[in-house]
Figure 1 (cartoon, rainbow, N blue to C red):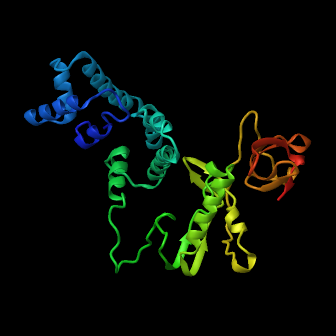
Figure 2: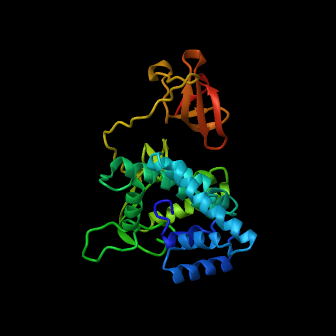
Figure 3: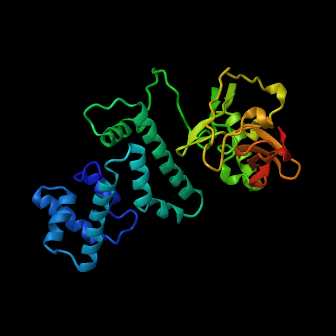
Length: 322
């Protein structure tokens, strides 16, 4: 709607999502006015409001919706594409709507919205845009890349599917990607033994889809929900007997950003021997991974995310490199 007020499909999609008190009778009146005057639904809304065609409550709800779109457009016109996307998501009411959904469905929707911000950042950084507004170009690219079409039989391609949809199928070669702590198993189930076992069974389902070769991959660094994260390999890889594993690693160096601020300075690796992303062990909390650190020498502190005890700040000398 920000890109084009006259997009009727977009109008109907968002006019009452989240619920804004704009009922079916109001929508029907808008459609009839748009058809009679050969205008868009947006313009029809302006016409009917000018004519005072609605009761006070319906008129107020519709006017607030038009104001919301105009305000979001004005507030974000000078922002970068990803900042614009994030602002609209946060102020449209979608986050609050999906937080109210019970179960994992609402969480998945929120994560998809966060990934949309990441996609906008990547698009603006890599796309060549000439003579077209970044938002318009991004929307056009999203429409083209929506994945509605599948490759033909004779075309070289990679078919993607979820682990759930792979049940009952078999393939000569299978790649399972993102086999990392925080992704698989998902970070939301790591403190629930029952759900961890469900994830483990799902992992087994994926592995047994391979008839000849199975590749399990993980990233040492990835951008997730707009942030750089450093996951360690999934515990499910660790469960596989070593005689069945053939580890292949590229000789590449991962660049890990350092935290710099007035209260948190990067700690040189040779100062304590610890670094961000490193696995460590604590006698009480068990195994974990270093998220960040501050200070030097005997005053150095580290933030560690432990598998079973959550995230904690500790004196660096209290942990042992894993």
